[in-house]
Length: 95
Image 1 (cartoon, one colour):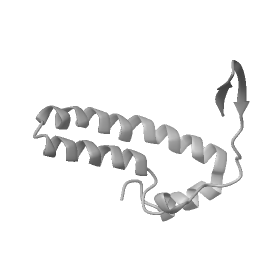
Image 2 (cartoon, rainbow, N blue to C red; image 1 turned 90 degrees about the vertical axis):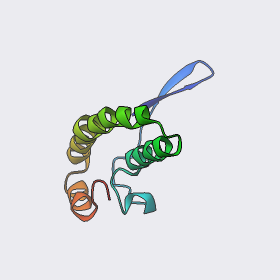
Image 3 (spheres, one colour; image 1 turned 90 degrees about the horizontal axis):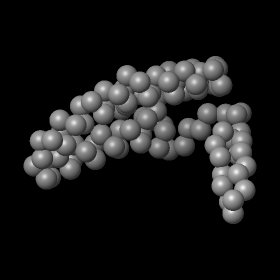
Image 4 (tube, rainbow, N blue to C red; image 1 turned 30 degrees about the horizontal axis):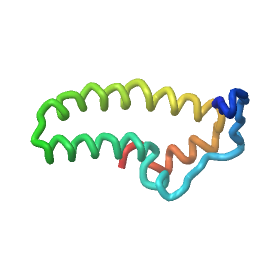
């Protein structure tokens, strides 16, 4: 559920809860956006020769792996049960 604000009117939008979306970007990794973020920061730190980007990536990646992803997976298991469990067994978390 999220909120949409349009011309001062706030409405709640409901997303369908009937299936797990396994489009092409989710067939190889369950977390393609987090993976892209980590690879982008790694590439930027190498390209800019900036050690601080690399140092700051460590706690960011750790919080993603240890806090964010487990919470998302708990939510998905609660809402999609067996369908998400089979998806989880078929697709790796990272690569």
